[in-house]
Amino acid sequence: MARIVPSADVADSARIGEGSSIWHLAQVREDAVLGENCVVGRGAYVGTGVVMGDNCKLQNYALVYEPARLENGVFVGPAAVFTNDHYRRAIEPDGRVKRADDWEPVGVTCLEGSAIGARAVCVAPVTIGRWAMVAAGAVVIKDVPDFALVVGVPARRVGWVGRRGVPLEASEEKGHWVCPASGDRFVEDGPDRLTELEGD
Image 1 (spheres, rainbow, N blue to C red):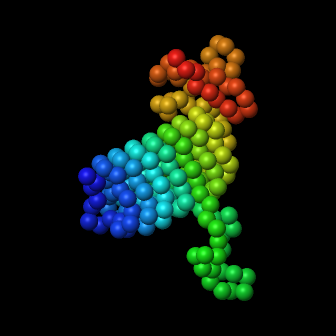
Image 2: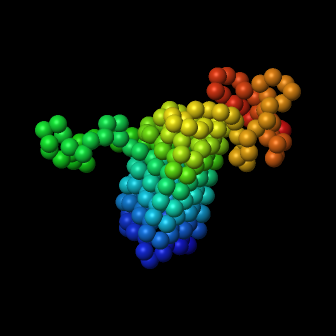
């Protein structure tokens, strides 16, 4: 059974998975889908039709605008923002107020296990790769590779991380990396491409 506190605003058409929790003042809009064991923190926003997999965490005041897609195990830090518009304007050139159907929304996609730091901004359309990590305060304007660690404005890759989030260390063999926490091994097999080695 999902836990939804009384001050949360959850649309009747939203689907909330078993074991999920939606905390104070959070808003989950129409037709949003949350998997099992998700957490939506205080004041967080989940837009219309957003889809989240199992075991995702949106920390306090994270803003996830439609049509974002989050795979299993995605972490979105406090006050992080996912945008959804190529060309932002409140009015037309003649002063008329823009309507909801005057623009085509674009989304942020977060692949399995990825993590977005506090106050980071992901400018749609971008894809955050599997197990990648976006540092706090970064502004992401292009796709982030699997296992990449990106920082800054605009975000740039400064290293690699493993599934545990710990920065990888270079091994003695050129182009090979190892996770100091798990011993998992990786190989850099292309520009900005890291592959996890099976069986390690």
